[in-house]
Image 1 (cartoon, rainbow, N blue to C red):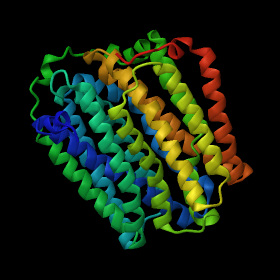
Image 2: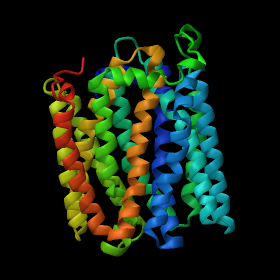
Image 3: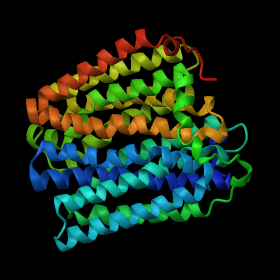
Amino acid sequence: MTDGEIGLLRHRPFALYFLGRGFSRFAAQMATVALGWQVYAMTGSAFHLGLIGLAQFLPVLLLVFIAGHAADRYDRQRVVQACQMMQALVAALLCWGSWQGWLTIPAIYAAVALLGVATAFESPATAALLTGVAPKGQFVRAAALNTGLLQIAVITGPALGGFAYAAGPEVPYAMMTAFWLIGSVLNGAIRLEAPPGDRPQPRLGDLFAGIGFVRSDKAILGTISLDLFAVLLGGATALMPIYARDILHTGPWGLGVLRAAPAVGALAMTAVLARRSITRGVGMRMLLAVVVFGCGTLVFALSKSMPLTLAALVVMGAADTVSVVIRHSLVQLRTPDEMRGRGWAVNFLFINASNQLGEFESGMTAALFGTVPAAVLGGLGTIGVALLWMRLFPELRRVERLE
């Protein structure tokens, strides 16, 4: 860790934000393993696995613009804190239901939907809050450090979630409850140098202003729409419970390792980018990274070997990090502070459409054609989208620098 990064962590508002965000992401990653394994264990159905993503996405679709408006109108810190308290309550109910044996599939879907509501409000507020807690002139470094922490959570969260689930489904839910409560307390302790009231307050009529802003910047539109369609088609990771149990013949711990593998590649790429920043050919590098992600998906789809599958997932995680760093930087640096909540809400809607609907699409395709053909089609679709976007969005292809 560099002196600059150590100095950032000594800045109290950023340090509290950094740790609170880490605990929240850690809990969210544990949830992916616990919920996926529990639903598949109870139903044995790829269709029901896909419905998890749909149940989480629908609240985002309905509330994301209201959430972006809330992030620009109200105290972002308190919005984040309230969302994490709500997530802790839902996790506690899942723990109780699993322990007492009354938890049903509809109850799980209802819990997932409530987590989706909280996430819809938390994400725009959290993203917009970063500019307020980072020291002046240190935003890019703070964003990079925050990304590194999130990747650590993505690596360790699924693995720990898998091991904890082996002790009983209520165990990971109890841990998630504790982590979200800790995150809420940490965010509540933040004292911002610039009070929220210093920002211009948007009117209700500005609810959808983020859409107009994104449409006006073709590079941003191309960036977030590329993520939408590429990951929507390439969301084969939703099929991991099936691969873990039926193809690779492993248990919950194996699912946790599979879930963590992309984050290992992501963390390694984060370390590379911290030393060798992308300074030229930004747009083209992002497009090529999506092509590599698609190729990794094809290897994952066809592999019947645990080491080869893990290697493919590591490559996918590394390629995805290049895309994520470029997308997040473009959106944050090109968006005015008074628009950041609503601008990020549009980006968040696209991200969740790709992730949650990607899980739904993968589950439906697997139910219709089989697990392996569904994953193969996803990889081919991702590559095709990247090649098509090179032609449809020349503005993105020509972006040279992140500044």
